Structures are given as C-alpha cells and as structure tokens.
Amino acid sequence: MEKLIKYLWGTFLFTFPLSIRWVFYESASYRFGQFNPWVTGFVYLPELLLGVVFVLWFIHKLRTKDYGLRTKHSWLQLLFVLFAINAFVVTLLNGDAFLGALFVLRLFEALIVFWLVQDKIFEPRHTITILLFGALLQIIWGLAQFQNNGSLGLSFFGESFIGPDVLGVAKNDLPNGTKQVRAYGSFLHPNIFGAYLLTIFFLSLKYLKYGSKLFWFAIFLIGVYITTSQGAMIAGLAGLGLYFLFKFFKGMSFRRSIALALILLMTIGNYWFYRNSHAVNTRDVSARERLTQNVISQSMWKANPFGVGVRQFTLEMEEYTSCESDGVNCLDRKMLPWEFQPVHNTYLLILNEVGIQGLLILLLFFLALFDLYWKSGKAMPILALLILAPFDHFLWDSWISFILLALVAGFFVLENHNEGLIEKIEHAVHLEDE
Image 1 (tube, rainbow, N blue to C red):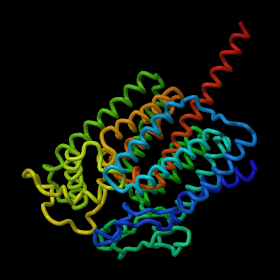
Image 2 (image 1 turned 135 degrees about the horizontal axis):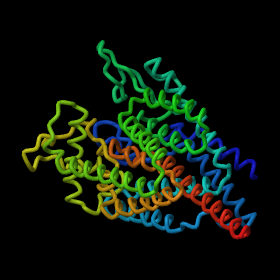
Image 3 (image 1 turned 30 degrees about the vertical axis):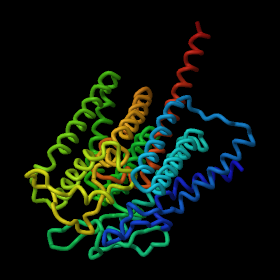
Image 4 (image 1 turned 60 degrees about the horizontal axis):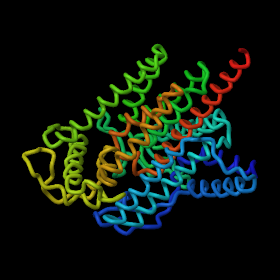
C-alpha cells in the first residue's frame, strides 16, 4: 500500500494545477447577466485524487498504528480550526451555507496536503523535484500558448479557451494595435499561474545547488514573464532582493528588522489605499476598476464588520455602489455584468467575507508560521505570498491557492522539525565529547 500511496501522491503533486472541473452547485451563478464563477460550486479532478490518497494514507496509519504526525505545533492547527469555524458560522448566518460548507471542505483538503507533506511520504528533495518538473510542464505549455497567441485545444486537460478576440481573457495591448494573450498553462488565470511559479521557486531554493539554481531561475523567469503578472513580478523581485540581502547579512536581528519594516510598509500602504481609494484619480481603466472595488469593500465592511459570508462579496457589492462623498472612484449606477468581481486585494476580501475576527485569526496563523521559519532562517516563500496578496483575490478564492499555502505551511513545519532534530543530535554529541 505504501508504494501505491507514494505513486498517487506524486501524481497529485505533479498534476494538481490541471483545472479539470465540473459544476455541481450554481444557485446564483447567472444572477448577474453572465456566469459568475465566484458563487459557483466546482469539483476538481485533482481534489478527487487527493481524497483517494488521504483515504489510503489514513487506512495505512490505522493498520500500522502510527497515529502521530511529526509536528508538535498543534496550536497551529487549532488556529486553523478556529478560522474554519468562524468562516462557516459567518456564512451560515449571513450567506449561502452550502458555499460555506464547500469552503470548509477546501480548508480540510489544504490540511490534508499539510499533513502529507510533513509526514514525509517522500523525502523533501524528492517532493521538490516533482514540483519542479510539474512547473516545467506548465511553463512549456504556457510558452506554446504565448507563441500560438491562444489555447492549444487541450480542454480535456483543463486548459481554458483563450484567444486575442475571446472576451474575458487576460491579454496585453501591443504597439501595433494587436493583442497578445497572456500564458495560462492549465490554470484559470495567468495571475494564479504566476503565484504557483513563485511558490515552487522559493520553496525549491533550499534544495538546489548553485548551478541548478541558475538553471531553474532562468526557467522560472521565462515562466513569470509570459504570465505578465505584475503582482508576481513585484513579489518575485522583492523576494529575490531579500534572499540576496539575507545571504550577505545573516544576523537574525537584522533579518527580523528588515522583515518587520517590510510588513509595516505593506500595512501602511494597504491602509492608505483602502482609506483613500475614493479620492485617487487615474486614467488607467484597470486601476480605476480596482479602486472602485476598494471603495465598495470599505462601505461593505462598515455595514458588516463581522463579515458577509464566504463567496458573498459579488452578491452583496451592488448595495454599496452609491457615492457618499465627492470621490471619483464610485459608481452610483447599476453595475455592468463584468464589474461583478471580488475586490482585488486578498486582505480586504477576507476582511469583507469573514470579518475582522477572521482576518485577525488568519494573520496570527501566518505570523506563527513566519516565526517558525525564522528559527530555521528561511522565510522567502511566506514573504513572497504576503507581498503578492494585495495585488489580487485568487489567494482567497482559488482552489489552487489553498494547495500552495498548504505546501508552504507543510515545508515550514517539516524543515523546522528537521533542524530541531539536528540541533538535538549535535547537542547530544557535544555532551558525549565532554
């Protein structure tokens, strides 16, 4: 059974980006004049595979009477459970209970990935190798789409239908007046693709030798470029800058000071835009749309400080479009179908949907993980995700994002546990020598 579990777990790690999915719940999907995926229930083929892996793994644990996991940080899981309970209760009281239950199920699936990673079904290097070659497949796929300026006809494997003239597809305007489709791979949006590449790259740095680092850096650079995800580019550059900075300055107090300064800067920046989005004037259409979403988010939170419920933002947003001040970024009119989108800031979206208490619990969870990673001296993956979060909403409402966050958390705890064992062994050897 162990070999079967390893085979299926390896297959999942390689294929979880495949967006092969089926709709099984759509209570309000067409209320907006067009299909709304954020209030629709999907089941993904890779999550079915994950369910099979979990059942076999659980049975194997029972048979071998191996009931423990390799982490002593049960308080991390307690915070996780408190967050899930809060999200479901808020959604049960204010929103769609079925979408709340589906969200809790996705959280549980992330917990499964966390358990499987830190239970070392594969050694960390083996896991990283599988993830790297899965990313390489996606980059080759994306390059082919970029060159073809459209999809490759691989919808059977979860590829989206994309092209320069297809509505709703992410693309860039070229100087000659044509449009260049951004690379999707098998993801539902290039921004999710970019987040996936950043996560895998920063997770792998610890396990790559110098020559391999240069090779994979070049590969991932190409991958992020063809997604043209500005958030991924900014987070990637910031992450690399911190990586090299920490290579030269290894003092723990210096690292903590830099990280604290970065977090404070991000907090102040987010708060300023949140409070002043109504007054910021820009000619860029995309930027104005995001500022308008911020204005709606602020009005919604003032009316619902404890949250409107998971996946309820687009269902509620039209009630908060009126202009209460002389601000430029408000609608004061009936929204058009394509304007029903979640606010493009993960922190604000969490604040709106599960309330201030949910956001605080989640921040405590990530701060705890962050502290664990400082003890092992490697904080790049979590920093990259923290930097990426204000640029979009997919880290909250994409199934893939839950898997990425679970992988990061799993490696956090695993590496912290391994280095703790090494310290104990070195201490024991030192005592024997004395």
